[in-house]
Amino acid sequence: MAKMIVMPNQAIIDGFKGKIDFYFWKGIPVARKWPRSPGGLRAPAVQAAWVDFVYSARAWKTLDPTIQRAYEVLATGSGLTGRDMFTRSYLTGLFRYPHSRPTELSTIYWKDASVEVLSDLARTVATGWLEKDITIHTSPIAKFAILELDFLCSACGTAGLSTFNVKKGGTAPAYVARIATSFNEADGVHKHQQVILALDDTQMFEYELTPATNATISAWLWLLGYIE
Image (cartoon, one colour):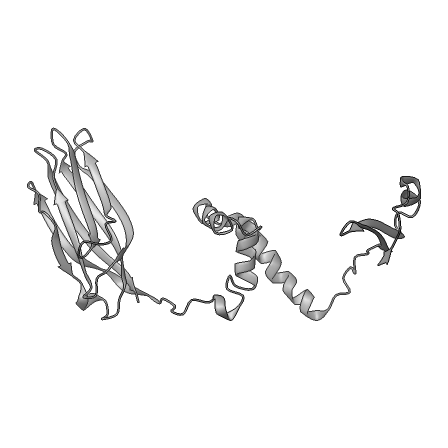
């Protein structure tokens, strides 16, 4: 790179196109040899990375839009696009420096077959909040349960909503996972929802069933896995 006192006029710049590249660096006019692509003559390490880069570019196009949006949110304020963040995560990992890594890594354990941990059939009155213990199906240090809520409204009633709610044991956090049906839905409506639910220190959570007026509901809860 060579520094100049002034930038040449456009005619001179055009005359050296393909040989000398004129540009400003930190407000200073400079010139350099016209950049050229090294073509296929690249270092073995660079060539080895091409396959991974091409794969990540193709993989982005096949991602579910919900996952793409998650990467876009993750990239907010970073100067990167969601696609850039995905590519970085694939090629080098999101946490590039030791001090950026979480001190604890979670491990997911999937059950070989889903386990039925709740079955409440043909209910016509509300349960209030009830505790459910799944210790025998998880581990003493499980922090989250991966659950599927299964809700059948055999008779949807004449007024209001029928609800199936689950939440972490105790009073906090207040987040509640819910499936609901309205009295004006067709009888026999069957709904499913998968959730990741925080557990208290004893692997307890709470659930609640509330039928609409004159409704009959049934609920099942399946444990798909857990997270330590």
